[in-house]
Length: 395
Ligand code: UDP
Image 1: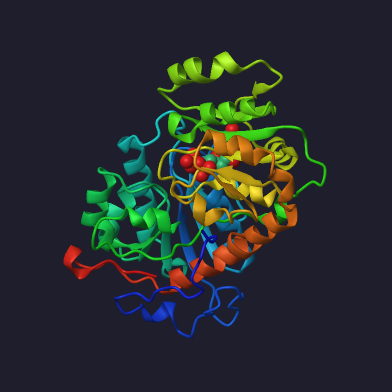
Image 2: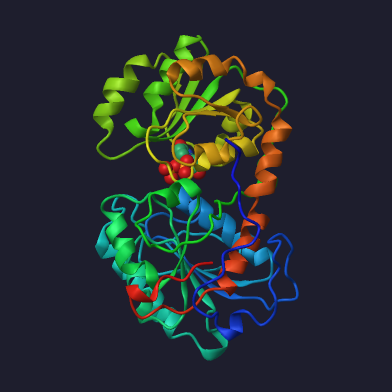
């Protein structure tokens, strides 16, 4: 299957755009800097759990950080509402007393964080009025988006599930929804209007590749069965190639780790190094022969795929979720059906050129390309519709 096929022009909104957002014709290529348009005032609403950027694990936080910095570089006025400890080139507005990494998805903290953000956005001086809220924050902000005058754009970060589908069917019309992959949209409730996909961004300049690779393949992520660290070990062992595993053991997954991962760790052929971040993580990606992604779930994106490609490191993945959109089979990696196929593909990794991997990222996911696409989406944002029958606004 061909790699991510991102339409250059966003789908227009159903509702007429607000006048002050679209005073002139936007840059339809989505790639230029659209300097002729006035800068936007953007309230970037990160989740309350982990500081931005995350010191280690934190996919949403890394997306928020990269996009925010790119928007600031492009001349926009961005206020980042985020957990205390966040650092950004935007104005940072922490709301709660502390971050809550151990209490992710507890309504108490999300409601507190979002309501304080809405109070500040609503109460902003006339001169500091926001044009748009870009929400990355679970469910509370979208559910309440029709209670605030500022239009809200909500990036869909997770897959649609039996629990979240009805939520979006009920509340999706209150904001502009942006998907991150076609695979994610495939699971959307019938009738839900969304836009994009706009892929997650990466600041390619901050990632470098290496000609000389190490001897190992890499697995990195959350230690859960659907992410497949045990299948990655099986594939690497089948061809006797060393594997390094990095990541966090998710709450409730210690028994899985003890049963399926720990018995294989020998410190040589199978190494587990726990959570990594910063330059150590980048070095791990850049030195790897390849990244293994034996996922068995409809993963809506897969930031580690893009991070590997940005490091000039090919990816071998099962064709689940967004993987077929992010990996150009035979050019930037391989799509394989199972562990046996993954083991075989490890031998073919030297066929993949680092330059092709980085070129794909530059074209589709570089921060500037993604920020330009979000700018179009922001300028097309409409205020909340009055009810589900009004339909959601699209980009
Ligand atoms: N990550 C990290 N350190 C780790 C494990 C993961 O920084 O030890 C990062 C990883 O580089 C990526 C994010 O956490 O940026 C995981 O995002 P992804 O979309 O791959 O997976 P998710 O967990 O969101 O399903």
